[in-house]
Image (cartoon, rainbow, N blue to C red; front, side):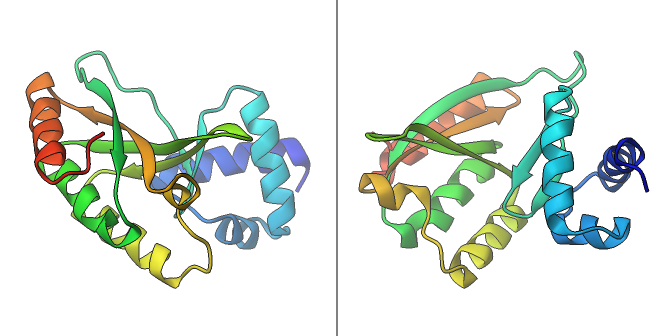
Length: 172
């Protein structure tokens, strides 16, 4: 399959699936190496395709329609790695959707990773991945301090999230 046809197929697969697909799975479906998929994703992003890289795989980000307004707030938090699930569950329990995590690193500047955690199941899957990975979460680089961009259906939801994070001692 030629490069442009393959990239078109990647977009189609991501659109049809509606959930993240790993690079290995895409490579297998297309009969190419994972590195070819990584290069194709980079080229698609250069063409302004909104493809997110999450811990579960690649996800095509479709813009929300105007009838679905959302409110966004960035929370600066700090906690130990073992408190991550409680932090994530606190956010989703009050109607938050966690878009990303980022840190301000003294040497590299801002380092950001898309998370796309919308519910407790997503949070549990993330923690399972964290527990089986040899890698450490970003907050380890900054003594626990990190930021989340959180989206919700109302300011009230975001206020509840903020109050609960503060109550648990996670909010800075």
